[in-house]
Amino acid sequence: MAIATVIIPTLNEEENIDNLLERLVEVQRGNPFAFDILFVDSASEDETQQKVLAWQKRAPVRLLAQKFNVGLAGAVMAGARHATADLVVVMDADLSHPPEDIPRLLQPLVAGTSNMSLGSRYTAGSAMPDWPVGRKIKSRLATIPARMFCDVKDPLSGFFAIERDLLVSLPGTVPGFKIALALLAQYRKTIRVVEIPIVFCDRNCGSSKMSCSVVFAYLRQLVSLFARHYPGR
Ligand code: GDD
Ligand code: MN
Image (tube, helix red, strand yellow):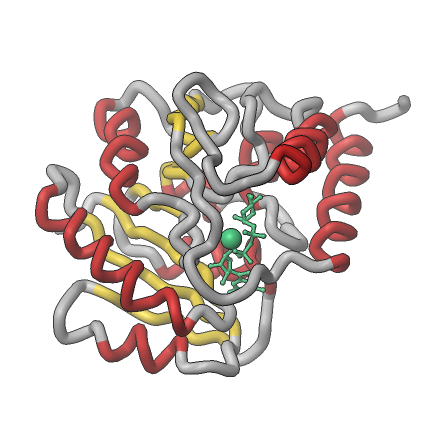
């Protein structure tokens, strides 16, 4: 019986699926915490869905295929509603998030010491070996406003484990990419979060889906968080 469902949103990631699943299956073999895998694909135009389906005979992999693109955060929310385990792990498909770190993310939740663990690029022991200094600075600057709404160093991380109920109970919709930030802000007063250092690598293959509309969605999210958490200012 799986104690966690690993949710992986995808949009045109055909070149990464085999590599990712090979590594995930290897982690499953040696992992004390059994997990299943749920891909949430938002109408990819490449062979992403076929690649995932081809793995179903070899590993506990499911595919939630959406007719329309609901965005990364929307895909994660849909995945949480379909997940079967009490815990979920959210990760990107492009191998920026090392699958080998999944047991380290799950450990504090299984032990009951945290309800959320965040794969962090900005805590002691983290590294981003592939990024040039300019990109690191931009990324770091982007986290500054988000830190008004939560108490972690990397609120924009897309790699985390959380109790499924918390994800499913998140009110409203989250535009764009920053689902972890929405959770951290919503549950700030009650959630016990631990940051786990990760080595964040550049995407393995294919291209990033980050775009101007994703940046605007982040700005919209910041404005609505500000209105909600600092009313009257
Ligand atoms: N279903 C779905 N729909 N999946 C999506 C969508 C979408 O609209 N957009 C992106 N994805 C999937 C990608 O296929 C990938 O698996 C994952 O979400 C992340 O997309 P990337 O294109 O690799 O994003 P990124 O590297 O720019 O941003 C990621 O890393 C940032 C930290 O550097 C995300 O995890 C961000 O949330 C994070 O801040
Ligand atoms: Mn990426």
